[in-house]
Length: 304
View 1 (cartoon, rainbow, N blue to C red):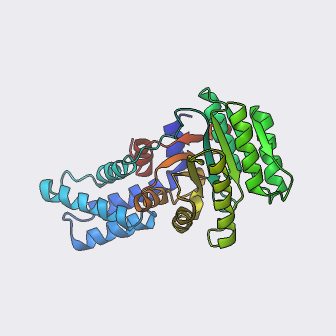
View 2 (cartoon, one colour; view 1 turned 30 degrees about the vertical axis):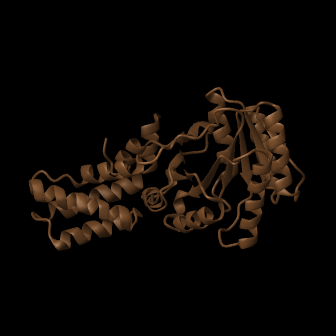
View 3 (cartoon, rainbow, N blue to C red; view 1 turned 30 degrees about the horizontal axis):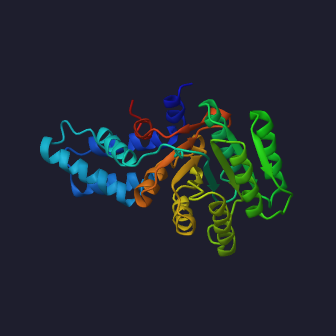
């Protein structure tokens, strides 16, 4: 299955509902009335596209209607174009330092798939010829350390880990030292899951980042927040709070293959101005894919 087919399959629930409703609303009314616009707004908000993106689409629909009337009005095409434009506005490529090590911190709440994302990202970078080291900084869960070590064995990637309940900042310190001494291209730091409402845990994450910054100026160079797509707009509040605490550089959206709330990707990017860097579409190592705005927009509205 190609990448576009995977995205399309993953967003099938969202696309089926959106496509059906938008077509029903537009074909049911020969004119673009206030009621029609209200129904369009309700449908777009119902897909978790968020108020800002919904308004952007409605403005574009009104503009098209005023210039060409209802006969040639293709709301799906307009919505697809507006979403693609918004999602394409920021560079989504993973950063790489011109010289030396690039440190990527992977953060998020419990259960979003951070450890698996860390391993899948290591796999992807390896396939591009990059050398990678993984750091097991989720020291509160022995299972997380073991899980990352198993991924390391499977991918033949070195994992720097401490003992269960060790200081995560100390593990991060050792990992930066090890990755630098080995001349690695990337260090991927798997941090502990933490609720965005817990101030003490957020301070601990800040400490991990400070320690790495002392070891290597400007580290971490990327701070990627992993979001579970099935949580819908709850993910927006998580993103806001993490962004306040550690200054995010991008988002990874997992479990897109099991949700009807795919629009939340658009809403979060639109509000926070953060690029979606990767999306997760399944369990296999190559199911984490670089984000493609056009493919996502077309799949979201069932186009293409």
